[in-house]
Length: 343
Ligand code: P6P
Image 1 (cartoon, rainbow, N blue to C red):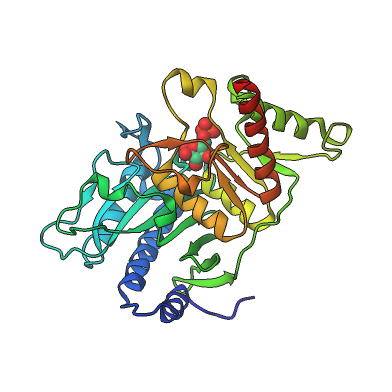
Image 2 (cartoon, rainbow, N blue to C red; image 1 turned 135 degrees about the vertical axis):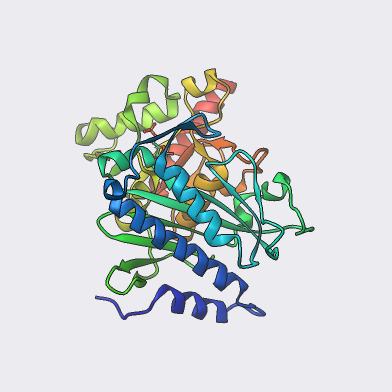
């Protein structure tokens, strides 16, 4: 059971701990919460309101857009453009940044988001989610450019996700730990149900898309082979595997019971000049912030994700995140392989 603390009350109580907080940030978070409630309702109704299926277009990533990708992107823009807390937004679904229209005041924050991560799952009724990250707008707020967003993940003021699953949940960090809220559909409020979420340091559960195995770099292949060898192998224990193809659902599972999630760099990506599959600004950085705040580790395999200095708004990175001891093992395997290759 829960003590009935709503996400609004929680955010305001968090705000009181911040010297000189003006309520701007609190109000921005509440606008994001409203957008996630609207998206939850849309996703939940699905084909009842004709929102499933392809939109017949491609996004900046070259991915076929679902109708819901476009609709949820619109929900985020409309919910967050009017209140005067933001100077601009950046979305996985849009090539260019979205400057706040001139009829609205501009504020001191920037918002990046993936409005519906894992959207390929919507047509098959598997959990999907929204991921968001809040940065401070540097310098001129009048019309920030793309470069204003190119801040390392350590600069994030807040990050969170909504998970549209059997329950709709929101998980949020403002730099003081990670807290989870469950949507009470009867009253339309997110209620605090998972206080101070922390990730177990050890796990016997890994998540990776094994169909890419033949393209993996040696350290990733070594780690997964050892997991698959189980009790008879070098790890001396059996492992379990999961792959939902929805990062929000994988991260939530890891926050709840531990685990390691990997979307590593592979030979197929290198061949097309890509640096990874997942996007730095609106997948890896917000999730990395949440994972670290819950006591886990988030790495590219060769460096801390939050330390990566972005070169481009839609930059991709390798992602290895979750339970500390397992991620550190994979990072160590990368270091060993790189030093052998350099010798
Ligand atoms: P694959 C969804 O498109 C996503 O960005 C992540 O949410 C998910 O973990 C990954 O891609 C799934 O990739 O190659 O298994 O479809």
